[in-house]
Image (cartoon, rainbow, N blue to C red; front, side):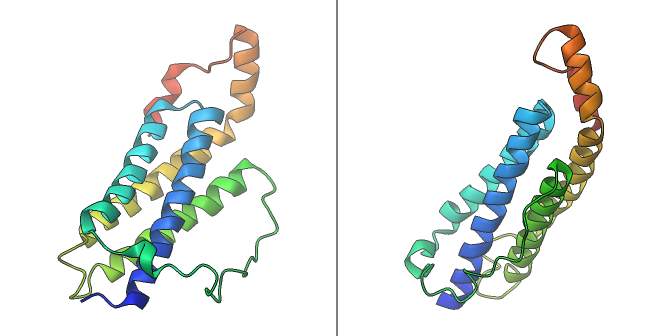
Length: 162
C-alpha cells in the first residue's frame, strides 16, 4: 500500500514536470518553431500524464494545496530572458523526474511506475535543454532571416540538432 504522503510527493512532482514540459514545449513550438523538439517534449508530457492514469493512483484525493506548507515559497524573481526561462523549466522537469525516479524504486511503487522510463526521459530532457539553449542562442539570426525571407517561419533545417 502506497502511503498518502508518498502519493502527495508523486502528485506534486507529476504536476511540476508537466508544467515545466508545457513551458519548454511552447517555447520550442511558438518561438523556435522547432517541430522535432516540440514533438519530443509533447511525447514526454503525454508519457507523464499516462503514467498517472495507468498507475491508477488516487492522486487528486490526497492533494492538499491549501494545507501544503511549501505552496507559498516562491524564491524566483522572474526570468531575465528566454534562456533563463528555458534553463529554469528544464531544471524543474529534471528535478521532478529525478524525484519520481527515486520514488519508483520503493517496494510499494516499483511495480506501478518504471524508474527506468523516468530515467530515460530525464536524460532526454538534458539533451533537449542543450538543444533549446543552442537554438535560442541563434534566435536573433533567425529573426533577421525570417524578416529577409518575408515569411513568419524559420527554415526547417534547424530541427536536425535535436
